[in-house]
Image (cartoon, rainbow, N blue to C red; front, side, top):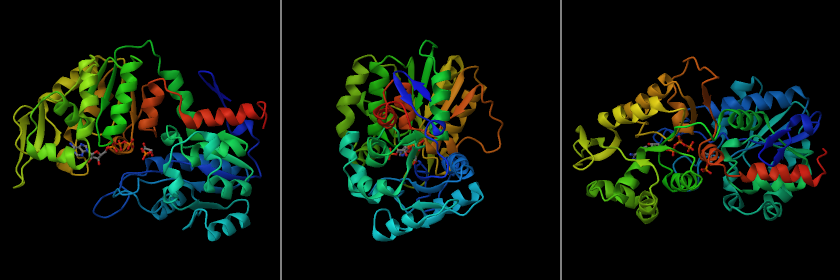
Length: 415
Ligand SMILES: Nc1ncnc2c1ncn2[C@@H]1O[C@H](COP(=O)(O)OP(=O)(O)OP(=O)(O)O)[C@@H](O)[C@H]1O
Ligand SMILES: O=C(O)[C@H](O)COP(=O)(O)O
């Protein structure tokens, strides 16, 4: 049992997860190379392999659900590659089932035997999965009604998706005995232990491309007064620069417009005016149409913004070195291109060298942590979460954790 504020979260040891048919929700949403469609990083797959192995050792039959990307985006792809990588990390074959709730999947799941592992297709192909609603409502979806009668236990290991109130995350705990998996347990207990609200200064380094989500997170961090300083990069920085009235040039404003981000400017401006401790880069690495790469001050931009500049790196690094806790999510630049990785790499280096505690989250950010470097677990927590991690640190109750709590108390705290 894990206690998170007033929530009681059951673990695998609380639900007798042996010799059972288990529905396991994981989050193996991974960065994808736009050109080749290949996965760029398998950190999340590796992390969840540990839970699957644990369930396998307990003589269970395991059916796995996960999502990848969002409909309409380049990284909204099949889970075929994920099944291969999961097999590699577990050391046992994970059969990929190209179906979710159709007759093929249902027949396969009915016949699954102990020791077998199936990975169903990307759950976001089921349109219901994209609608957020309270657990009781999600329990009535086709997804939950079709799959739940085929299982004994539901295990939620998807910490990285725990901030979404989607059927695969909050619907099943209403109808099945449920528990947190090993990754969920490790994340929640580690973060609760290391993240002391009293420790300051707390610095958040927030970049990447999920601007709308990050804006919401900054609103929460600011409202709950959790952050002493928020260092922005990536498209998040561009939004705040535009909100501050900095002229980023026509081409960059067009990038913001094409991503539907201009409508977020009033909210970003409100945060700035309310005194939220948001820092904006003073220079950027840009690329012109003819391929020329330059470093330009924020108030005189001619190319397209691709990374933060060297003065920004210097200033941000000095803040990072003074912090007690540094949380980083979302890269500073377009890291898919090697030429624009320097900002992210340099800030990661500063964080690892700083005396403060470092929490790193988000698929792209994790992929930038050098493979093979020694991580001191007493000083660094590499989280599988991105948005979920930050909302958890902001003090929000995550819907998936609330649903596990509901499941537990509805059974009188018994399995
Ligand atoms: N200036 C920029 N302009 C456009 N895209 C950018 C810029 N800076 C970063 N990005 C893009 O942001 C994307 C990563 O952002 P994202 O918010 O998904 O981070 P993440 O670490 O993967 O977090 P999560 O796992 O929570 O999604 C990359 O594809 C990168 O190219
Ligand atoms: O990468 C993430 O943050 C999680 O997989 C959740 O994905 P989402 O932001 O598309 O819901």
